[in-house]
Each structure stands twice: as structure tokens, then as C-alpha cells.
Length: 192
Image (spheres, rainbow, N blue to C red):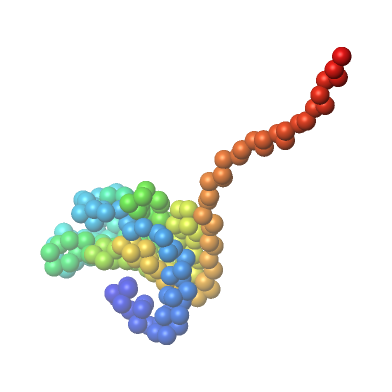
């Protein structure tokens, strides 16, 4: 399954309407940290089963942590899909819940959680389902049966039981000025 294309095609017109509505949630969000994709990917897990060969799948189990630059994903089980160049093209994590986080260029944290997280490592697209939650630090969050988040553009879509929270932009209080006392008039001193 190609996570982004298939989910977009499957939901058709209703997906378009939800895309438009959800696009309003993070209008000022920044992209994922520039350069994360060019960093080495590291994994830690209890066990591994697979090949380090083109067009293969490697399964990681037990306290899986995948890190690449500021991106960190955690789960109970992960499948790493290697492409024809033996590069990690896709990661499917399962957990209670699986978790992904990444910083943007302004060091704001984006997090996502769901029992299944399907991450397209080439295009930076994460599909989280079911009971998915995506939170953008200082901006708000979205909950849905399925959320698709593009870490390169901060654009995301959601379907099924969608709810969102929008955080107000924090404004700095204007400096408080002390009121200037009103001039007092005093009666002239009596003359002698």
C-alpha cells in the first residue's frame, strides 16, 4: 500500500472537503527541520529479522526507536521497507500507541500518535490510524480516525470523527503605564 496516494484516492470528494477544513488548522506552521532527511537513520530494538538488500522488508521488534535528525518514532514493532537502492523508503510502526515527533526549523515540536503509523520516508508523509492525534506546539491539535500529515509542508488531512483544538496566539501585554496624576490647584496663601 502506498500510504498517501491510496488514502487520498479512497476518500474522494469527502477527503477534499476535509482537506480544505483541516488546512485551516495550521496555517502558520513551519516545515520539518531542514536537513533531517539527509541525516543517518538509526534504530534500536530488542530483535531484528530481515535483509539489508534492495527491495526487502526488515522487521524490528521490542521497544523500537527510529531516529533521523530531529525525527523520532517509537513503537512495539516496525517494518522497514528498503527500495531498489537499499534506502529506507517506508516505515510502518505499530504500538500502544506508536509515536512520531519532529522539530520544525523554529524548533516547534510536532507529535503524532496512533496504533498504526505508516511513514513514507522519501516524501515525509505520515499516515496515522485509527484514533490518531497530531499536535503542533503552540498551534493546536487534531483527532480523527485517520490523519495524514506531510512533514515537509505541514499540510494534513483527516477523516472520521474529526475534532480540532485551535490555540490562540499568545500576545505580549502592552507595557503598563502609570497614570499621570491630575494637576492640583491650591489656593494662594493669604497675604498679610
